[in-house]
Length: 357
Image (cartoon, rainbow, N blue to C red; front, top):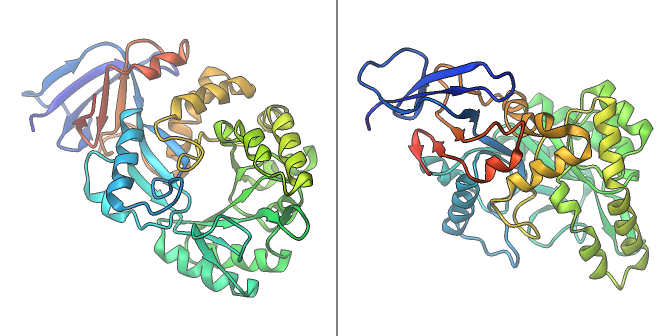
């Protein structure tokens, strides 16, 4: 593969951007024989989907080849780094495919029997086994562990926490001892109290956040991945929960208040990242929808773009467009800070040095 030369501008500050691609790697050293692919346009690091499940689909039974096709759909939409927060399928074989995004994984969801979607993760009969399972999933993942923090309790008929405060504290301690960070799926408010107080590293969804909890997240530098296009599905989820009217009402209320909750989190200084929750209700390839929704809840176009590019790349230690980084980037016709819709029609999508578009 011949070396390639790219020149354009950084959408955040308008400054010139120039680099060369040699194989799958970015170089800042001039390559005299390189072919100039573009000498204008706007260049951004590959988009990041910080909450994605290529190993999950309605009805389960996902094979590695089906997961590959989901990953391709995400990559063609510009997602070149996926934080896969729970999968029943080991997707590590996709790491050898240069047309797939880069993955940073959390292993399998950790839940309890009948307290999450069937067969999606590990169901612990004894919740005191949580620390040992966290250690196993830390070894299986790429630096993350995923807990189910709350889910419907069929006896209570509504969302309820899965774990005690002591169990969570032990889980966080073990994750950190193994060099992993720990995140939790949470819709409601009750489970958030202990999760935030014991120091998880991130909250997924977070629709039940209150002002006090938001302040505590800021104090503890806990990130939030709000998955807005998944939250948009809450009314449909509620419509399918006729057997549990309290739960259905709760989900509708969480949906109704979500925009204000996330705007308050942004205003307070909670660090937020783009995540689609693709795999299930949400189709793959919808990262731009999520970016546009983030812009609508207080991040604005520049903040939303940062939440899907440089922000999560720094958070995940994945590199931007520096010398020696994997060559994952988009070349755009217009400045996305002025027009996010330009992300829907990139001039080039380069994944590991290969042109997908």
